Length: 258
Ligand code: COA
Image 1 (cartoon, rainbow, N blue to C red):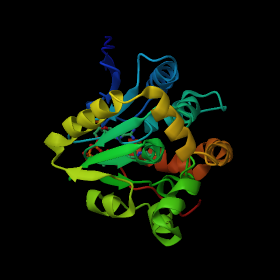
Image 2: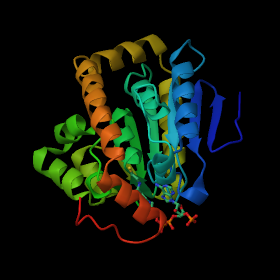
Image 3: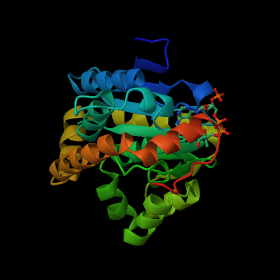
């Protein structure tokens, strides 16, 4: 059993590692340090048999506001080894089941990481959004591949070009979410499902997940690398700089010159 008193809490019990995003004052936006912890946790949990299932959860009012925008302004990810990309590869290739409990807004990577989870339970207050274009950016986490696969092209274009939020019921309808429950029950439902999984033979879980994902992993990693290259470049360009500066200054961005 272990606890890390930090922006990311990690607790392992009876084969289930629960990761809690715990930077609620900043709406669980994710810093470089948090990505590094997430990457380390997934990489370690992939090994051996002590961990059989990972649960990822946020707060009852906020799952995650996505990347920390100040962090992006100050130290944009510079290479494939950056913590954010290391985390994305770790969750995309994680061999054991991952269960997510999502309540409140799930913005940017807060939504795209869910495409790499196996089971997703949502509070009825969950709101999913991928506002990359609004920030002068492009999709990440292979979402340009996985979102149209799941939602169909036109709904994907609406989600990724307009960047408008969609609610838990819509996420349920397209299959991004397994079940919608009251927010106060969401973590418990995820834990209950994780416990069921943890009681099953790990080798059968791993082999079944491998077969379910067969043929997907290589294109996902390839798309992540291509998106990562564009994303890294676009972070330094005028549109993103304007969007981030405007967010920090709490004003509307002006893209008339971008
Ligand atoms: N990066 C850094 N700080 C963030 C943040 C982010 N992505 N999202 C929220 N915060 C900070 C705010 O700056 C604010 O800090 P302050 O108290 O020091 O002023 C605090 O968290 C509370 O945020 P606020 O916007 O006041 O909360 P809200 O309840 O009105 O709205 C959100 C919640 C998630 C809808 C809103 O914060 C938001 O849209 N965040 C940005 C999402 C985004 O564009 N993410 C990037 C995706 S790539």
